Length: 230
Ligand SMILES: [Zn+2]
Image 1: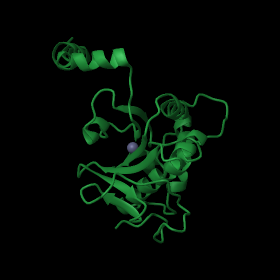
Image 2: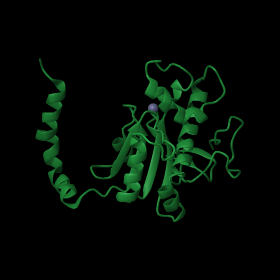
Image 3: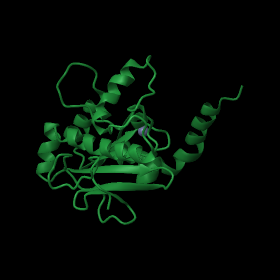
Image 4: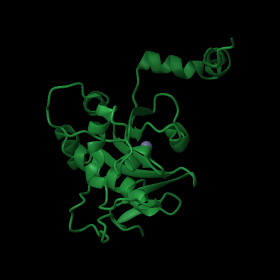
């Protein structure tokens, strides 16, 4: 039986790798020095390398269901995302942290019901997005879009609770970027604090500004509590 996955592995080794052999050699000899920590949803339609045009060695990737950042609560357990944040900031000395949510996100949809009762870890994990959900029983596309964007802002708030992140952001050594990728448009909307909302990259004048807080009096929020889009 033909093994499609094996074929792809061979194709990478035989066809793709030779074109970048020297780059990988350099990344092995010199080590990795990624400048960006990219925290993205695991959704298969979100492809960070395509969005950013990054190549090998440029992005330190953390992906999970919902692109969530767990609280810095020092609790016991196996905290993969928190460990990756610490490693990227303390050991790799990244200069940017991107949190990237997206349209049609199953994690955000699941905040309104639908997760399998068997998925106990998933149910617990989704609580990291709970505050982003709006008080409606049957969310339409607009509510889901706002919830997805609110979730991004919420994760950036949590990032600021990591002492090593806060310290570097306040010292101007790290910048935080909240992104919402609209799959069907192929466009990232970046959160711009000065413009009070998510702005399509095509008309934005920066790649997102932070830190910010949902309860920041300087941020204009609409009635549903989401930063208003300009
Ligand atoms: Zn998602």
